[in-house]
Length: 328
Image (cartoon, rainbow, N blue to C red; front, side, top):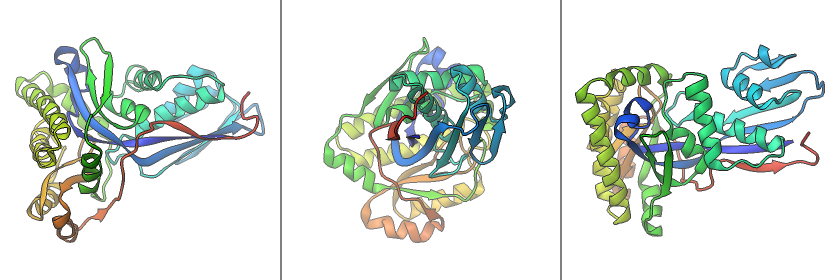
C-alpha cells in the first residue's frame, strides 16, 4: 500500500485573478498558505486485478476505466493508464467549503498514481497537470491557485502570468511574525457548503465589464500590499487589507455573500476582528478572521459559529507511507 496526503489551502487575497479570462490580459497574483488539514489517498493492487475499486463518498467497482462515473478519477486513471487497483480517499474537511478540495484531490491523485508507477514528478509539474485536468480537459470554470497551493505547500505569493505560466515564491518574513499571524487567524464554519462552479462561472462572465476588472486589479494590488505588510511585520496592516479585499470581492459576482454571512462578519468586526473574508468562491464554507489575542474570546462568543482550529503547513503534497512491494 502507498498513502499520500495533500494539504488544503487558505487564500488571503487575490482570488479570482487566477482565472484565465483575467490573467491572460492583466496578469494575476494570490497570497495563500497551505494548512494542516489534508486529503488522504491510498492505493494498492486490487484482489481481482481485472477490476478497479474506488472508494470516496461512493464506491465504484468497474471492469473497465471507461465505466468510472467520478470525473476526476476517470480522467486521471485513463490518462495514466492505471487499473486493477483499489484507491480510497478521505479528507479532514468536506468539499464545497472554500478550502480548495477539488484541486487538492486532483493533485493528490496525480501524486499517488505517479508514485505507484514508480515515477518521480516535481510538485510544480503536479500542479500544472492538475490545472490541465480540471480546467482544460474537464472544463471546470476555476482558476489555478488551489492546485499550486496544494502541491507546493507553505505561505506563498503566487503569480499567474499572461502567457499561462505560474511562479510561486515564499513570503520572506520574521519567524515570530509567522507564528503570531498563525495564532491570530481564527476560522469558523458557516454550516453550509456550496459548489464554486456557478459563482466562478458568473465571475468569469463579469470579466467583460470594466468595473469588475478594475476591482480585481485593485485586489491584485492589495495582494502585493499584503505581502509587503507581512515582510515588514505589519500584522495590523495585514488585517486591514484582508477587510478591504473582502469588500471588493463581494462585488465580483452575485452569491459570494448573503445576509447570514454578512451578519456573522459584522458581529466578528464588532468583536475585535481587524479583517476577514469568506474562503473560496463564496456562498458558504468557512469564514476567516484576523483578530488579536485580547479580543479573540469575545469574538468566539459573539459570532455564534463553530470554530475550526488549524495551523500552517510547509510541505505540500507528500508520501506518508510506502508498504513493501506496492508497485507494479
